[in-house]
Image (cartoon, rainbow, N blue to C red):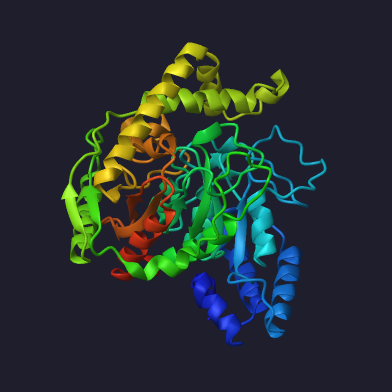
Length: 466
């Protein structure tokens, strides 16, 4: 029964709180017990505060008993990725260069919004140092592992968050995505993960990687992601990039389905090499949208691989993240991040401005594409989850992480909403993800399509054996 609570959706938990058949304290106690047993295997959390979590749960229970919950997610267990400020706990960013012995008095906007909504904050999840790569290991917290196969990576950089949700260690997880860091681990671990439109979720301080970086929900179900996004998207004056606030009830629109939508399906984006197992599974998933009433056409969006444009932005961001470190601190940094920093240091202003212009042209291309197509479907990833502790699969040697993530970083450049949903498994039992990309600002449409697909399948109901 305890494990059933741990794998229950947030929406189901709230229904049970409302009906007095469950309490937030019961759920939190069950999760803390499972975290103690499972987290040593997967290394999803780098910090768990049982006392604080139980205090949050007791306060939520009292509100539900009085019939005065703070809102539709009061009492839902949640985590914060350890590159996001959290009052009372150190934010170490997976780095030995951050001194934990300082005043930690500020919540980032997303942390504050979840507290205000009554969520039970369990702790902080692991990240590679400064969130720099598409897998999750760091000099500070070691290797995080995939609950479906502990020898493999859960992806990154929100790999701790994805491992948490997939392993039944908490219903909500805050992820960040600067080049796929929500969608990569969501795809590898078989959970829904949404990168909202840039500016939808306020951020402070702004990521050192700049305007490719988004914050979004990672959850057990698409409905849970919709519920979580509504809270995360509430306004905060500290982010001057934030979109104008609209109190959108994302969950209310989910039943509308996809009937009548015109959907493009691009299995390679015109340039990617994809594992045959992934290609076959995603092809079946795309065809299901036609069965659900959409018009599905196989078509590429018509751009070349923008990896060089992305690298210019990403490497420059790494330089920005580390440029103030002392020589002594640099000796503590992940060697791969140091190499990324050095590549950023070599970028000229002219090169950066040229990349910014190319980025703008890509954004225009996708705006025009969505004048014809409501949504775009692709695989979430080109490869299956590979050996934990590596930057790339063995057959790619020393390739950079972008070599196997061709479907994610283009839509950080364009800032569009994009979501990974589970769509099947490989013969070896590893999850496979489908990516749904929407026009800028149409987070509601992406969630609606994801919910329609999820309702027609049962991939999200499966649990890893841990």
